[in-house]
Amino acid sequence: MMDLLIPDKTHDESRQGEALMLNAETAKNNGRKLYIESYGCAMNFSDSEIVASILAESGFETTTDHTSADVIFINTCSIRENAEQRVRNRLKEFTVTKVKNPGLVVGVLGCMAERLKSKFLEEEKLVDVVVGPDAYRDLPNLIDQVDSGQKAVNVLLSREETYADISPVRLNSNGINAFVSIMRGCDNMCSFCVVPFTRGRERSRDPLSIEAECRDLFDRGYREVTLLGQNVDSYKYSTGEDDNKITTNFADLLELVALINPDLRVRFSTSHPKDITDDVLYTINKYDNICNYIHLPVQSGNSRVLELMNRTYDREWYINRIDAIRRIIPDCAISTDVITGFCSETEEEHKDTVSMMDYVKYDFAYMFKYSERPGTLAAKRYADDIPEDVKQKRLTEIVAKQQEYSFYRMQSRIGKVERVLIEGFSKKSDKDYAGRSDQNAMVIFPVGEGYKPGEYVNVLVERSTTATLIGKVV
Ligand code: SAM
Ligand code: SF4
Image 1 (cartoon, rainbow, N blue to C red):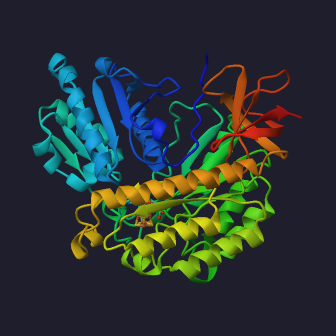
Image 2: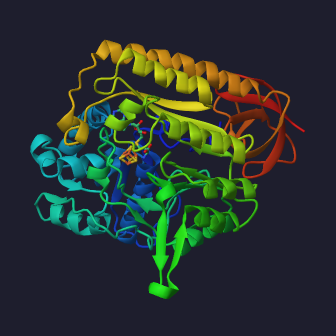
Image 3: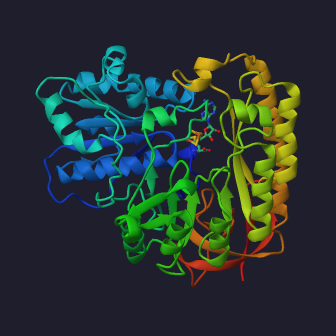
């Protein structure tokens, strides 16, 4: 059974550790093979495509079999401690491959590389090369350095690098949805978060290069792009001098991409509650092909905790933004991220998060226990003083609450007709197709004559689970 990939979420658990394969053949071929495995958020998966593209230029082919590789790269995530542990465990598994092939180059890329720098080489003897997220252009040189018998490190962060000119290659693509990075880094200093340290200062990519990439994807048959950034609402790109300066903000960029073709769906992630403007909401509402779905991480429903988290908004502000979404975009799905057991969070304050969930009735949520990250503001200033069992109890409570609301949202679609972009066969059966609705709900319906992956169909929803709508084409 052909099971097409559905890159649905910005952090897709089912894709963690996935080995990526270049669809196209490399123009030059140096006879060496690259195996690249990715962890973490969609940004990392998108970066792995940049890495593969840079190495394809130097003649590397890709492989999904690490035992036949000449270079093994792991693109890592540092966001929580268990993400790092996972990578360390995985590295151990490559030891045998290295013993069999002493010429093998093992590299660690991404956030963990940036956080640990050359310490990584001391801690994990297997590793030959450590490369941070802004240094991927240097990879061919770094591999040469390892080939000549040295270890290699480049963890320089940049204020300019956006890889805007790297012609995109797509790894493991279904040929229908693609991620497009529109900015890198983050200038917010949420106290729990390691990203500003591992990905550096925020910088936006030239809108014309974003438009060109999206247009090229559309011309090659892609029908959905997800614009990626840690805080897409602060996207800002200026050209020209003083009086003739033209600035493109996120609302302008959305419009630019939406105008490429009405059949190109536009999604984006992640929005920040402090920056999302009514202007952006009006633009979403103006274009049918900008999807009615916003991921708006709340983290906590309590204003004191939000202040400790340095999120720079409070409960009232967040509710005001939710109300604006409901007012300006009728029928918009909203999802969120929540952290339980942040430093000094009381039971009462936790209840405020629960009541926020009651207020918004999120369609979907990513929920995490607070994990202290070395070097962050919270690690320096506050004690990680909520016992593990209390963090877990609070997490279990909000997970149960979210299940209720996911089911409620799904049930509310029964009897409605959804416009679905077909992405491939359903994971369970090749008798059914799967695709997403405008609101990002997974929709399953029988395979039939006259429609195929990459096309839109109208599906009447007949029933649902907590995560899936089930229906028939009408
Ligand atoms: N830039 C996005 C934002 O501001 O919401 C999210 C970036 S982060 C990759 C994704 C999510 O991981 C965050 O929204 C937060 O809920 C979670 N997260 C980040 N640091 C964490 C930590 N130290 N412990 C637990 N969860 C964390
Ligand atoms: Fe981390 Fe906050 Fe930046 Fe998101 S906005 S990446 S949570 S610092």
